[in-house]
Amino acid sequence: DGAALRRLTNTVAGAAGPAEAAPIIDGAPRTGRARPVVTPIDASVIGSVIEADSATASLAMEAATRGFPGWMRTCAAERAGCLERAAEAFRREKGRLLHLLQVEAGKTLDDALAEWREAIDFLRYYAAQGRHLFAEPQSLPGPAGEVNSLRLVGRGVFVAVSPWNFPLAIFTGQVAAALMAGNAVVAKPAPQTPLVADLAVRLLHGAGIPSGALHLVPGGPEIGAALIGHPALSGVVFTGSTATAQRINRALAARDGAILPLIAETGGINAMIVDATALPEQVADDVVTSAFRSAGQRCSALRLLVVQEDVADRMIAAVAGAARELAIGDPRDLATDLGLVIDAEAKKRLDAHIAAMKATARTHFAGVAPGGLYVAPHIFEIGAVADLRQEMFGPILHVVRYPANSLTRVIEEIRAGGYGLTLGIHSRIEEAAERIAEALPHGNVYVNRNMIGAVVGSQPFGGTGLSGTGPKAGGPHYLFRFTTERTLTVNTAAAGGSVGLITLD
Ligand code: UN1
Image (tube, rainbow, N blue to C red):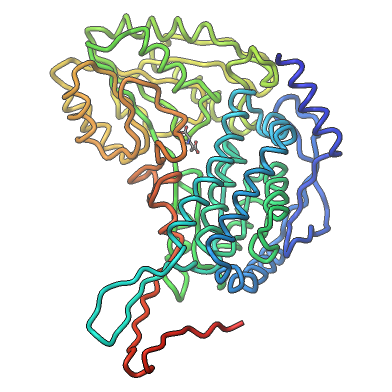
């Protein structure tokens, strides 16, 4: 039961001592002034972090530059083997990882478990993909007397910048992909969640990832800027806000020298369109899961419910009824559906939005939250799709009604917003769902189900436009963007028929 599992995770975590995080460069944790890490649950201290300064960020980039050539030449099977062993280590350390996800990120047990599994899935998936992709150079046709081959190779030093809302799964997914593709990695976790990232890096090193190939640099945006401005940079993988991705993009564009790739997965004002043929009970269930699970702190979460006016009152009542049943409270209690938000800043932003909505929109549901960093679920009706122009990263659902004959206009309004991450469609008319999906640029479209929790390998995840660059995480094309291609053409006649490559060490 919940209490037993909580005791177990606490015991395992306690046995390991207090959690600490520090920059890890060439396998060695750096010393320095530590600041306490507090849990969003009750603001008690759960560990400490030594954050990097810009000199440390440079050291990490230089160490990664030295680590890159050896790792790039390590064969694909060995690189994949490291990730697979790391997956096993993550399995063994379930107790500590779940504990940290709960106390550091305030996750419910369901969310922590799902995230822990997703991290393991990423490790195994990219290992399996990479084993196959990087195994052998691909031979290509050519004229007689000539041998052509194409080979995928790592680009160099990748900087991985990850968010607090999936501090294990996205952190691990970015790092695993960049490593599998043969890059050295400098990883910067979100400032709110350094502890679980530190443990993940130790497990990866323990599984055989060379200390020169993976470095950890905890810190805030200024450290991210130092890493991205460093001359040794070869590429960036980023998940977080659209505004930050745009800043990274500008910083990359302003550099002199090589033109570098940015792989970004950002936000969305994700809509679900519900027509008059949809089943109200199913809609209620899927809307509540999509809008309120994880306290709405997923980039995939539903923000805007767009419902045909003929059934709007019924649908909204069903959704509000289901929302009323949600238990808000301590994320460590098994009965809890909805935990808290990540920090005081997030709460302030959400509270201000709720206050503004209460003054200008129609309130269909306002939940009650305990004190602290809890934000109750809310449902507001707004006049038009265009009235919501900002992603609100919390348990707040906005509703818009549309007359049956204005669906085309509603679709156009959603498109005009510029985001393209997740899209939900509830309709029992098959062609309707197809027509809507075709008219919009969204990367992940969910029909007659909830719209969160993309599964690695089954639902490759990522958006377009303001929502990201692609390729999709957990999909078959993700690893390509982390690589560059080398075409080798050898005139075999001149070499006397034997082709070999000299390896430089
Ligand atoms: C994010 O919230 O930053 O499908 C992205 C999902 C998750 C979303 C991850 N893969 O809900």
